[in-house]
Length: 273
Image (cartoon, rainbow, N blue to C red; front, side):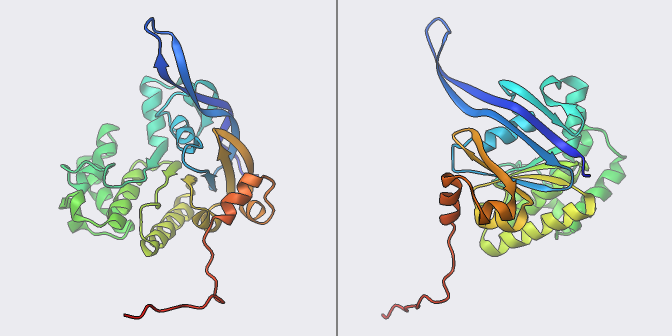
């Protein structure tokens, strides 16, 4: 039986949006409400929902970028709610994030080779020569080459920048990666290449992905399990085929119905000019 790498129990996250003159709470946004889930090691679990459903906030709580208001999160042997100091540093080596916009997540004033080595420098992993060698190896693994290490982010296409983000995420040899809309900004052909790359790397290193997305077309071909969120709540979950073929919730069915489907019987009309 595959051991769970992530266990989330009753997690909620509230944001105070307005306070009184005396500092009392007046308005609160309940971004995540009493969410519980389990993720098995080596699998891909997709969290799906429309904008504002709480999926990205849940991902930030899991990676300790935001502190949960209540509930518990255990990830890769760490109690996320109790992390600080050296334990938080150790946790950062285990868990990495691939963000939606690869340009804004990369420092435009730093060469990409330095960006990939930043984590290794901070955690004092390897010798300087070994760090450089590993950086080159990671660039080559994601389809780039050693010459690219000296370039800046603006000198790359969107797909190439996302490959650099993947290389940076892999630099610390994590066991768990949160991919937050990691391919949503890419063209269809580039999106397929990046997803294939992520799948290959997962098979090589037995990585676990929490794949946050609103694109059910991508999710159906990439995820082992699907979690549906709405209004901060987890309303449905199950194996990918079950969710798509036999959804229980009307909201899930509406999301599935919104996925564009090519119709080979539809006649094409060419504009004349």
